[in-house]
Image 1 (cartoon, rainbow, N blue to C red):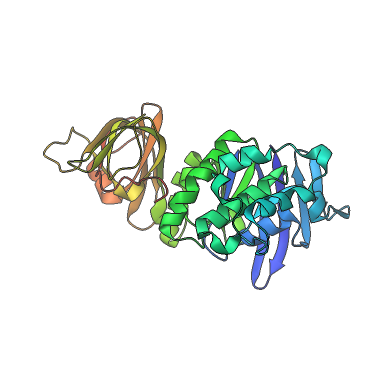
Image 2 (cartoon, rainbow, N blue to C red):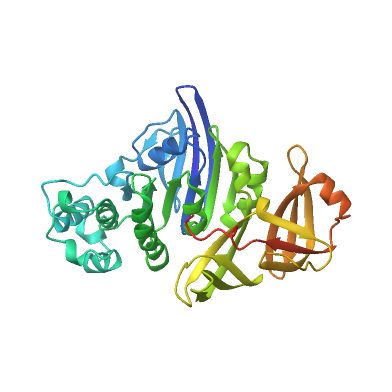
Length: 360
């Protein structure tokens, strides 16, 4: 999938000037509330006519204001999952699912109803009406309805925002299966970094109507250090790992990762389960000699790959550990005292309590 987006639009007091291209399987539009994410996704869907725009999917141009081209929403074959499920209350789950098929000609349908029902675990719900479903179940039906449109692109707008934590953790595995098992590209709007780090292959980072960074999520995550406010505190590293074992006596999960053995607090999956782990740069301490006598359980040896000036008294250090990269935010004073320089051997220290479990 190749999605090309160029939008210029003014909405109230916000000037939106967005340009990006993505070939990712699940691309996240991420940023704080009010940054313009809603406008971007609604222009892609055809729900908003912008002042200036060009939107193309795999070379098929939906919008080109310069030439006057405008493809109506129902002809774009784009599925849309809203924040609230928006199911038709008088129809059963099965009827709501089949409602999605009406928007696509029979000759263009490629998604199998039985496969969607199995993928989303809906077989026991087919005869129910929306009033008798939980919030998580309603959202799964909404996802299924969008999939049965046989869309070329699936848009998901804050699909977990209206759910409590338990329902969010119920839905996340289904979105992962959708990402991994189907070949439908997804644009996922969220302001929750835990969702993005768990789900996204690529990320479009937005602020005040502009794209400030774009690319694979593991490359963009360290650049949050240059953002403002709370967002800067989320800068860090994204590590792919696999659950090795859980020790119920100590309440610790051991993971196999490119960093080596990694421990985190709590049970996060059964052995063999693949996870993405977010380690915030502010949770990493550095040492130039092998540390000992620490309560911290995670110590990784590597070399300094880069040092960049941060805000105020801080610097951001990127450390290569094998094929992985760990980011650390420390004071300028500490970097000088440790005589940090590119190529120097260092040890990253991370508490098990600081390692971010998936979706947190």
